[in-house]
Image (spheres, rainbow, N blue to C red):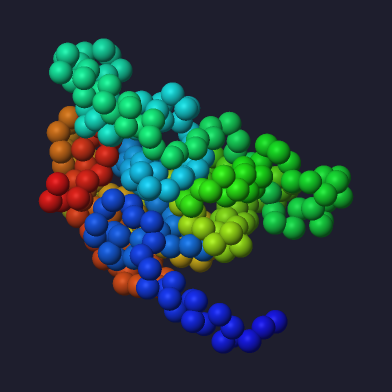
Length: 301
């Protein structure tokens, strides 16, 4: 133990500093940036853009600081293409089908060069995390964390200077040496990540799938906006996260036309700040969803 007054001057000096910026101004203002020791949860249903939001954050932060991105759902090639489309503001589908004009090809080439300058490390093949006390409780690991573990890769990323860890997403993660039920497994994962964020004094962004809403919430033409209780095994995930941001695209539910992530055009979307341990919560922040290049932008852009 130590006196609580130890290092108070340093802590007071640091507390007013804004964290890493997501690029979405109202979110950055509400949470004061992505701050050290925080576990930030991004929740969303299928095709709402939660992975795209994580990519937006990675690309914005990596302009100025190294970022480690664990992409458990997408391949490195998919992530690269999405990132370049995001930077170039060009249609993902048209690039994939080689339907772009000569002028757009020039824009794409410029975006590729800009992408090369970003400080973004990617890992797509490792999805297992272990308890922090693994080496104490399981002698068969002989005092060494497995090389192919998220724990080990996070340590390497921090040694390389990374200031932000992003993991997409929770439901694709495995918990090493686990023999219990699914509910407690997810809690064990988020608790371990929260501890790692605190130990290394680094923000960790974790993407999570939301449960489908009850049928009652679809009645009378209501748009089923996400809420904290939609988090899978909500009690534990809500408890472990410092900040919870829920992604919602109302237009996805308002039309009979089949929509997907790559729909052309721009639509209004919402980022719901459902939990914010150190600030205001329960607010809805309007943003633009640009489906062609899979990116959220500020309303004024």
